[in-house]
Image 1: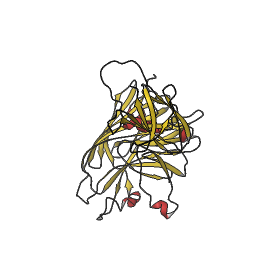
Image 2: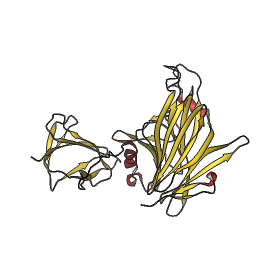
Image 3: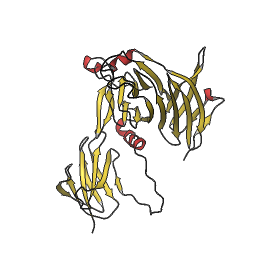
Image 4: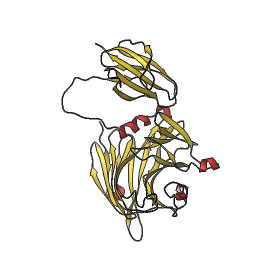
Length: 357
């Protein structure tokens, strides 16, 4: 595994670089202070480097309204302003993972953020803790990217939905804030970029910017209901090639589902292996009827129909396709512990596996 290359005459000139990303840390000067401005990520291409300003935070104000938590979100775009001050930056880790620690205030709210880049990773992670004390404010982080796309891709539970990245029609203007699950992405035929998150599900997309909503500060239906300590993680990734060739779905899962580690020793084995990257094993669990059968729920994630081969690494007797309530629909063939299944775009399949006696 490669290590992270670093270079710095001082924090203003610090950079981190692995085979995929180059991160240039920048600060700006004003008459009154020096403040953390943003992090510059350069996606290393075969023939050129594409600069992408990332993690530009800012506050938006809102006029007082009885329904200020929902109805007036569209007004935020007109009153957006930087709110970061008293920022301090230090290098908190090097080697297999480079870490920058950023502390400071956003308006009256203090925060700590760890910006992480692991060796051989294309995912830049922002782990954030903030003591939120605002009222009538919305905190967003913006990722303007050098990717032209008429539509953005927003993940939903089993697949994704495409929504416009412009405001050319009244109907489009009404979608100033939309929902996403683990990722939202811009892509064209040759490259793309995505913002990942572990618990922040509102995002705005206009032009070439992905603007993730981090916190709000409404006064109704309860005054200062959102104030207090908040901990969350979001991330940025980019890739060469089409969306179907990207690993965005895997990146989203890796950010949200950490591997469980237990002490002990076991021979190397693979429980379930799927030969198609766009077919995801979302659930593996015991059957609800207490029979001891294993339920596998799989889905196609990238709007690309495919024939998949599921290899099962433990001894099984029979396998059945089921409905979502785990009622058996039909038996499927098993050959050398492998099951072949066709998937339509975004199709969900439930496989019931009977263990060998």
